[in-house]
Image 1 (tube, rainbow, N blue to C red):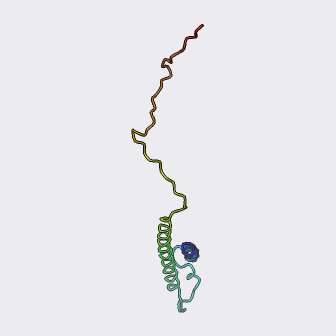
Image 2 (image 1 turned 120 degrees about the vertical axis):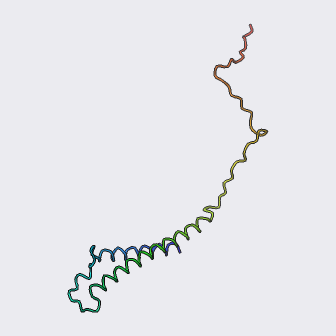
Image 3 (image 1 turned 90 degrees about the vertical axis):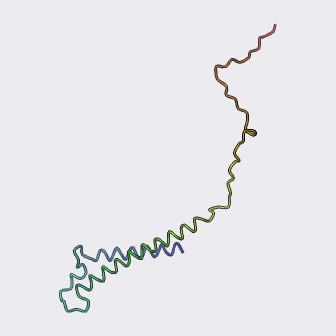
Amino acid sequence: MYIFITILILLASILMIFAVLVQKSKGGGLASGFSSSNQIMGVRKTTDFLEKFTWTLAAIVILLSILTAKYTASSSALPQSQVEVQQPAPLSPSTAPDVTPVTPFQAQPTETPTE
């Protein structure tokens, strides 16, 4: 399902790119090519359609992104592998090894050679 939603997001994004590129920055865009005002889809209707189409595609991308995040969060709750890592038990004072620090200049007992 995750891959399917991701493909839908990709298609909606590509369509939105084309819809934005067709529009003119000051309005008009594809509609500026129509010179006659008595056509069925005149200048104003084409601009309205492209604007509504762009906003609809933006809403679709946002909703599909939220759905993708939902599926990602639910699948990440599952264990990634079957290997379980056990943490070592904390050491208590009775089981801790006896480690006494030794300073390097501490006098070591030496043996005297016997003749």
